[in-house]
Image (tube, rainbow, N blue to C red):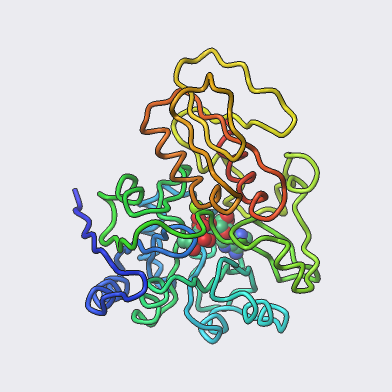
Length: 330
Ligand code: TXA
Ligand code: MG
């Protein structure tokens, strides 16, 4: 069994020696988990087919689900994708930050990275450790969330260790992440900007920048999704703990439950019958930040069912709903 090396790294003042070592590992084709402002990523050299293959193996990820490539500059993005003026404007406005753009890929990107598609998803994270690692390694880093495929995404190093500790080479530990849900993914290859995955950058922010964003059907009417318009990775049960997840929607009665041990998370207060396993958040921002950690925590507490407050579709509520809905499937 492989033994992962875990290094504590100060977020605002990353140790140069540790970053150098991790960057060397990336260049050698190894797997390095690192913090971003959204969730922890599982990084490998995006241009090295063999290294990227290891990501899919470690996560147990379906091969048709493409990865996000992380860069530290607009120039680096332009080396791997054809960036339109509109894409460049969006990058200038929202990078570094939780926005991923799907663009036409250049030849240099291996097909395994883009899941066999002719497009590639790119983002520039704002976390100082992520930026330092990308800069030091001098190559674009492919990184999905550093969890076992289908599980809640990791928002701290312990969660990465729990899922992947025996399968990867290095974990850079900078404590819990800020945003807590993954980046917003948009497709900018066509006439209109299409939302593929709601995330840490609210759609309202894109709209106030002057972009009309097309939402997939499932996000603006009912929960049935128009599969073709969504990212490959948003099709299956996902973000799910081992126990059942039930959604408590606005205006609905509290669900009748036969089980003894119930867990709850959300902003609204649950009925007092729920017991002690209750995690309350003050705002949508806090809910997003604590969502995945709460799912993992309640799972460890051994609850039989998790009831989750299903927020409104405003701001980060859209991303929280998306993650909870997928966690509740199946
Ligand atoms: O915040 C994030 O985005 C995190 C951190 C580590 O950066 N990464 C992340 O990666 O969430 P992952 O692999 O868990 O999710 C990537 C999403 C998937 O839904 C995938 O299908 C979609 O992006 N995606 C990637 N490339 C795509 C492409 N060429 N076309 C459409 N969707 C794409
Ligand atoms: Mg993921």
